[in-house]
Length: 326
Ligand code: PEP
Ligand code: MG
Image (tube, rainbow, N blue to C red; front, top):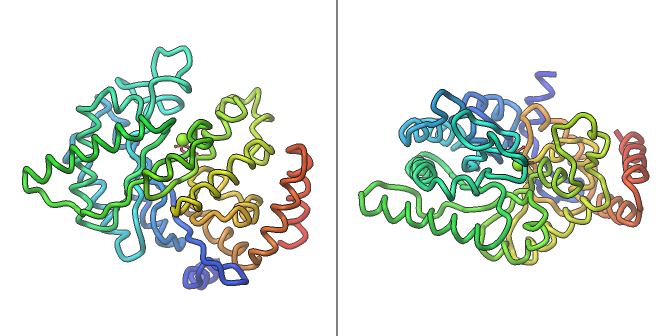
């Protein structure tokens, strides 16, 4: 297995007809960077910064954050870019002393950029720490839970303000940092054409996008049977997000669990997804699948399932299609 992994690491994630796909890793703490490299990740597609805040007081200073970001950026520099997501607190991510507590509907509540925009003091320390760390590698900044254009304009304005501050303090940072957003709220998915003109990339967060599209709590066992990644409604959204982004000339990544699901890989290829980001351990298997299919096969599969009416029908068709080949 070790030997197979090493050989596979040297091979590109390329379909049989030559479409190059980029496979990246999701991490939660800097220590995971090593595993990402060992599994052949060509970058970090999602660094969940929440874990820096999961400590007494719920707060990491600008310098503590800077050290963590710089460490990941330095380690990954020879391999690829590092996409750091700004604080996604609230909802299912409760941080003691911060958002997410005592709300009737925390999933629909004061979370992620909504929280950060009302705590600009905290938000600025994170944006400054990221910008300062950018000199150590290839940083990309990503904002979670964007629901519309005004929210996006507000976070971009704050980022500009932080850049300006650093310039005034003569603190260096990279000038060409790509800035993107997660597409994980249905209103963002449905206005992807508008949002795409304001950012450098999208990353689809299927964990939340499925939750909000089907109105099914991602953590509730009683209704887990309704959490359907191949629900026709979800698939239509995914297809549309990717098409709208490509029409605007920006690439699309996916960093939700679906990106690491071997049964979803060919569908995502068929939709034209550019970057798959997942837990490091999933990379070799997804790479093997990508290397053994062609884009025309993937597009044909997508053409067939997009005509189907139910999750059940799509799911069983995809499973037998995959099981026949893999
Ligand atoms: C997602 O929602 O799909 C995602 C990647 O973010 P998280 O799981 O951290 O909410
Ligand atoms: Mg999410």
